[in-house]
Amino acid sequence: MTATPRVLIGHGTENDFVVLPDPDGSVWPGKRLDAAMVRRLCDRRAGLGGDGVLRLVRSAHVPDAADVLGAELAACEWFMDHRNADGSYAEMCGNGIRLFLHALVAEGLLGRAACLDGVLVGTRGGPRRVGASPDGGYWVDMGPAREFGRGSAEVDGSTFTGAAVSMGNPHLAALTDVDVDTLDLSREPAFDAGLFPDGVNVELINVLEPGVHIRLRVFERGVGETRSCGTGACAAAYAALADAGRDEGTVVVDVPGGRLSVQVDPRTTVLTGPAVLVSAGSLCREWLGD
Ligand SMILES: N[C@@H](CCC[C@H](N)C(=O)O)C(=O)O
Image (tube, rainbow, N blue to C red; front, side, top):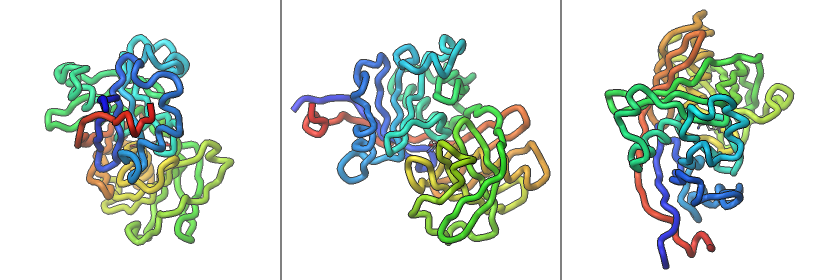
């Protein structure tokens, strides 16, 4: 049996991903990484397991990169080709993009020194600047939170109301006095498809200190409950600050998988947190069925 595509496993605050290095787009061309393959890779029993897949690929080798990046295509050497565990595409992934940069460096595809000022990475939500922090973590400039209404979702038999917030991808950020640790998030929340025609990530948020410290649980579109969501943390920080009558500040966000920090102002949102690689190896030809 010969070795086949290289693969890494990693996470950001326990939001975990199968990472596929494919710098020149030759390893996972065309339909090889279709929705069925993504689901197989993310399967926690019959595959490697993960909340999603991140393909490390140069923008020049992503057919739809020009559509989403426009004139900024040339400025984004790398493209975070992110997929949810169910095979669907998402516009943005805040935990994934930190791991993306960490994996590029670990794979020798980018020098760590180049990351200190930040590197512009293409995503389906547009270009995002991501960089290494001196403490070993990573930051990403996520762009401004955009509120587009109020909505609600039904979770565990109760209705939770909150802000509809776009971080490139859609969120319902609902502050609640119900202890979020007591909720059953095993089933997909019912939501308003008129407000969220492409689905929604639902964050249920407890305020620990107004405008300063929150904790949340999240049910992610295309995945299910995850132990963290970077874009969700940004949407939640924005909603917590708004609830405190502010449009800027730094919020500590505790998630089941760890801690993130989110700096919000009217112009942009900066997410900071860890990125961890757990293992590296290769897929087996037998499993791939090549
Ligand atoms: N976990 C991610 C978000 C991944 C995409 C999301 N499930 C969606 O479909 O929008 C994060 O860290 O932001």
